[in-house]
Length: 226
Image 1 (cartoon, one colour):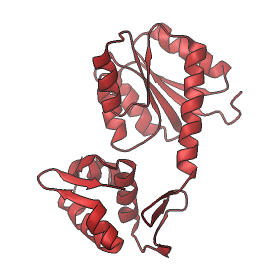
Image 2: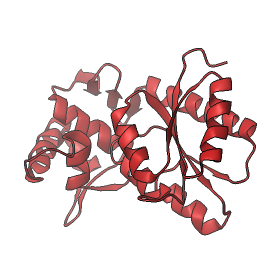
Image 3: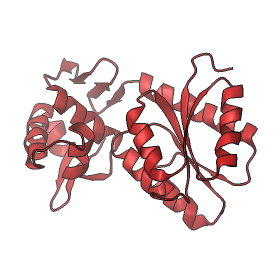
Image 4: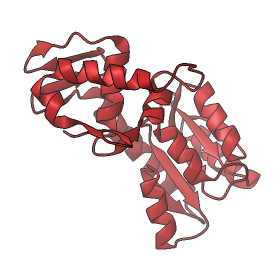
């Protein structure tokens, strides 16, 4: 039994599926929030910060599961499970390329789904609790502090959030708009040159690590490498 009442978002356009998963989640000690299309799922995810894991059907109206997954991945690394009625390799590849953590084919065993949820949440909690530490750079998300070779980096809140977002998405090219939306939010009215100035200051504060590992991909955006 999950005593902390972890909240799971379940999105599927088939009510019998959402009710089945919801019943098993409740019986296993979780809270469940239900959506019946992709747009509603994204809206509920943005509204409820307590959501710890997302289950998305691929074939949904308004926005499909792949689209919702990609949008969530712009701002969050919370675990995502994709559901599909098909088992083709293309669907699985699309799911993982969209940022999904696991993939379940219908029909499925609700008990097995619960076990997969538990495994992903355990993995996620370990990743969150452990500060990222490579090549002299340590990022402690819980304490909102970063160190370089044991020295505290004097970062602004935005610089720290950019560093976290880039490191969470390391080895991926992130556009200025993606960084802007993730750090400043979709309602920010400035322009994406704001990102350039913040990244430039962040790179300077990271010193030689920043010069080597925080790369500008001309015409596209930025790429962080550990």
